[in-house]
Structures are given as structure tokens and as C-alpha cells.
Length: 86
Image 1 (spheres, rainbow, N blue to C red):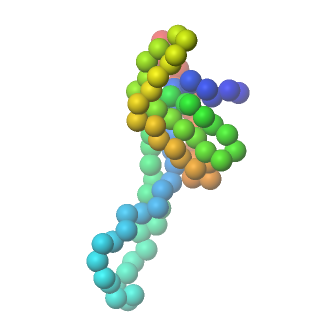
Image 2: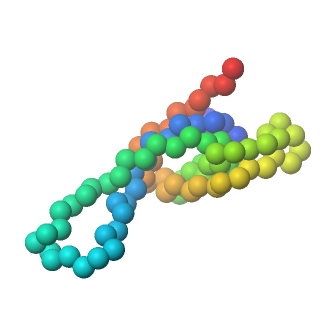
């Protein structure tokens, strides 16, 4: 299936936020992964990554455009589903 220009809902994992202060090793507790959810139009989906855009114009025209590109490593993606529009 080609995902190009499809609207998708993606569940993926990311690294947790770094703690910006010194900590004793004994006081550090693992945060684990951050579970993320994103929605956007697919620009690229290949063996390495998914690139989506939350805002697009002119998808059916000669020069589609988008804003807010986000790239998610393919290894971080847990699920991806097409959102059907009316």
C-alpha cells in the first residue's frame, strides 16, 4: 500500500526527557519510553523513517505544500493506520 499523501494516525515511542541537573546514581529511576501519538499527512514512508506534516494545502494540485514536517524513525513506530476522510 502506498501511504503517500494519506492522512494517518501513528503510535510511536521516543526517548524520555533528559533531567537537566546532577543526580546521584542511587536517586535515578528509569522513566522508560514516552508513548507518543501523532496525526499527519504522509510525505515519505520508507525502510528508515516516516515523515508526516500536520498541515497541508493543494494535495490534488500540481504543487502540494505542507508545514511542520516531523520525522519518526521507522524503528520507533508501533502502529500506523490510515484515517479515512468523508
